[in-house]
Image (cartoon, rainbow, N blue to C red; front, top):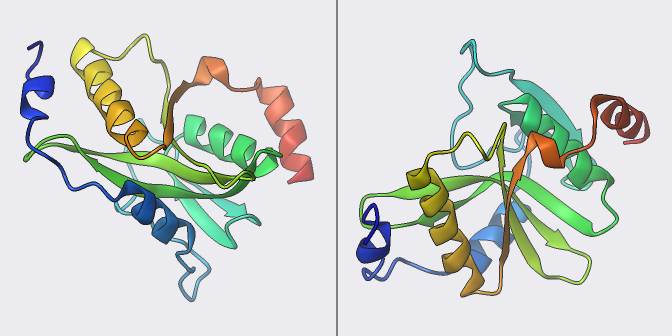
Length: 168
């Protein structure tokens, strides 16, 4: 059974992730132009570099929690494959008591849906965390939704990101 997540999965979580992603992608900004996700972004932690990212594809501004999230947001905004994206747009139920709120969701130009989780380093994740993301990937795949766990080593270098930011 491992850490127990697979055994607990026999509880049938509420699916409908496709509809939840589409709802997140259609969220309108508030009066300040901010598009809020499912979780409040906390400021003031020494381990977080909170920033605002304005997206033409989303029609508003997102608050991001880390440098890795900001880098991935730049990639999503500049991607020719991603038509629209949002942050913290999906809560994936792993069991009766456990869930994940994924960092990004998107719709590709072929209308397929994708979800992302951004981490500083995948190698730094515990076996339990890896299992949780594998379970989320399985649950999303049941509805035809692609899931990618991304870390800073998979993203462009800082000079390339700076270049992309000048265009988008």
